[in-house]
Length: 178
Ligand SMILES: *[C@@H]1O[C@H](CO)[C@@H](O)[C@H](O)[C@H]1NC(C)=O
Ligand SMILES: *[C@@H]1O[C@H](CO)[C@@H](O)[C@H](O)[C@H]1NC(C)=O
Ligand SMILES: *[C@@H]1O[C@H](CO)[C@@H](O)[C@H](O)[C@H]1NC(C)=O
Image 1 (cartoon, rainbow, N blue to C red):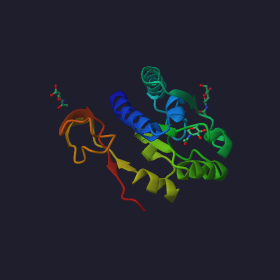
Image 2 (tube, rainbow, N blue to C red; image 1 turned 180 degrees about the vertical axis):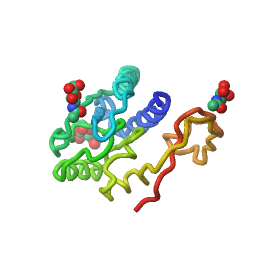
Image 3 (tube, rainbow, N blue to C red; image 1 turned 45 degrees about the vertical axis):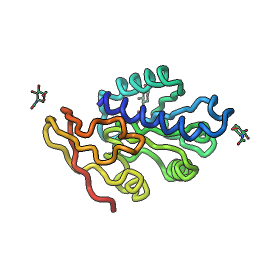
């Protein structure tokens, strides 16, 4: 799981740098991530390790991180300071209607989202979030080796992968977008 976080955030870092390259005063401005975790319906013991891994990435790659499990921080005003929100192993229903509205507005203002692990096992009843994810978690078989065929090696988040990537992990099935 840690490797996947690293890969995703390196892609995100590249994205953030690209988007700020046009304006030199923007380029020196440090990007800030909000890492959101919750106990929800199932607590993943990997959460503190995930936060530590993202904090290490932030030190190595010069962005800032706030980590919280407090959904009341999802307000228009507070979210403004962040370049992206990370749902780190969230589960179940995590935001109330007002917080959802602030998050939708944040995404529509061209900001980023990273969903890690059970972010896809979160907010099943919220169809906007379902579309943001591209599909909710359905099930997973026992952990096993898989060979991933990387079909888009130009996309910024996947371009550093080899054509075929072999990895032992908890592979998942997803429900189609509703
Ligand atoms: C560059 O970014 C800064 C900080 O956000 C902004 O104040 C300034 O107007 C921008 N300059 C240009 C040329 O877009
Ligand atoms: C939030 O984090 C604090 C401090 O780690 C913990 O005591 C609390 O139980 C957590 N609450 C939720 C809802 O996750
Ligand atoms: C997965 O692949 C690794 C490296 O090839 C191998 O050592 C390991 O035994 C494999 N695990 C399973 C469960 O097949």
